[in-house]
Amino acid sequence: MTMIKKKFTSIDDGINNMLDAAAYDYKSMGSTYRTSDEFREKFMVNVGQKYIKIGRKSDHNNKMGSVWGFVVNTDDDAKFKRGDLLMAAGFSKPARNAPRGNVLDGGFGIRWTGPLYL
Image 1 (tube, rainbow, N blue to C red):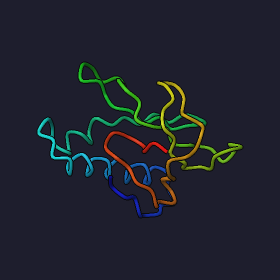
Image 2 (cartoon, rainbow, N blue to C red):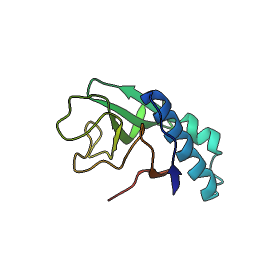
Image 3 (tube, helix red, strand yellow):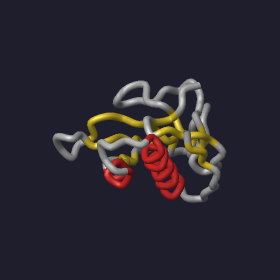
Image 4 (cartoon, rainbow, N blue to C red):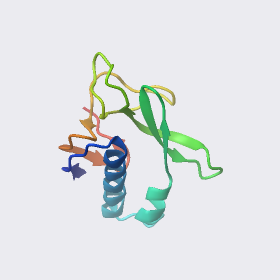
């Protein structure tokens, strides 16, 4: 697990920092399948009104093949605040039980596999 400590005012900067930390965690795992740079390049970020979906490119095409997590992209959510990191409940929606961290506030752990379970 890699700890995210930095704080950001830009959600884009917070997401990029988190994805860099996930690539660092991948490198520390010692995988020989691909380098951490190749791992980092496979991330895709799709911005929506409520959520930013973060996924991994398929090895077969340039489309998102799996969802890695979601980041809340609104200040109008009744349960979460902007920047909260959520696990995926499926390809199209996040698990809305609890945030796994906040990309703007920092102070959370991340693994290369995605947001941590509770």
